Amino acid sequence: MTGPTRDLIGYADAPPPADWPGGARVAVNFCINFEEGGERSILEGDAQSETRISDVVVPPVIGGRDLNIEHSYEYGSRVGYWRLLRAFMERGLPATVNLVGRAGELTPQPLQAMIDAGFDLHPHGWRWIDYAKLSRAEEAAMIAKSIAQVERLTGERPLGYYAGLPSINTYALAAEAGFLYSSDVYNDDLPYWSPDHPRLLMIPYSLDTNDSRFARDGGGYVLGEQFTRYVCDTFDQLYAEGGERPAMMSVGLHARLIGRPGRIGALHRILDHIAGHDRVWIARRDDIARHWQARHPDERAR
Image 1 (spheres, one colour):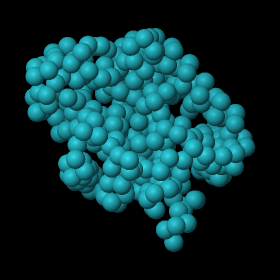
Image 2 (cartoon, one colour):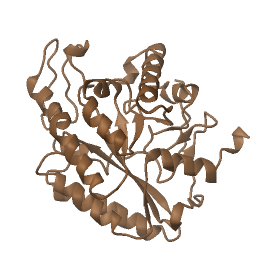
Image 3 (tube, rainbow, N blue to C red):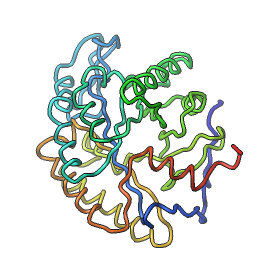
């Protein structure tokens, strides 16, 4: 078995000083996962319907459509994105768009609104699929399509990449494509440089401070208040530790989940709680990557 080196030690008990802007104790990044329309569907040439991350928990329909799943996803693009966007814009706060390329093609209006709001685009694969099932060449071709899409939309090359369901080749392909960072890791509270690929920064994402737990049958959130409490508890602990050891946290959002009327209040409470602290940096993912590169450059790249 080849692939990424497994590092069980990391920074150990001596993390580097983050030196976040303004002396912030915590850098917080909100990621809006833009996936609706990019999920599995026979309309997109897949063999089955989608089964993941929605309020509908059902087995796949093989060779057919599941209209309940489709409509659950469509709620995000039709309604949910606009609620999320208003929550951030009312407070003047930035966010990152985890952009599934095909979803961006099918729902350009909310995507353009987020670009206009100043959110950075972070490619999240061309489709919302398992990349371990593709050949290396197929995965590389999809990454190239995502890069070209972001360049068309923003005039700039994207800095980071997040497959979500990566293959054993994803890190290497991200490095070969020239990305500054990858977000396909969940193993630290700070960025770190890839042990295998010089110049490739690893910026951890999170599956616990993530509204996808609303869609985990039997093991996740039921009420919006549970999400609020968990995210705020995470922030409070990192903020307390940040007097000596500043860290970062990611919050994952899905418009078809947190964008529901019974849940959006949880996001409002989270944003107000975090923004109510003085020494916090609410930042786009690209800005965190640029800061780390400037403050802690990869010594192997010199």
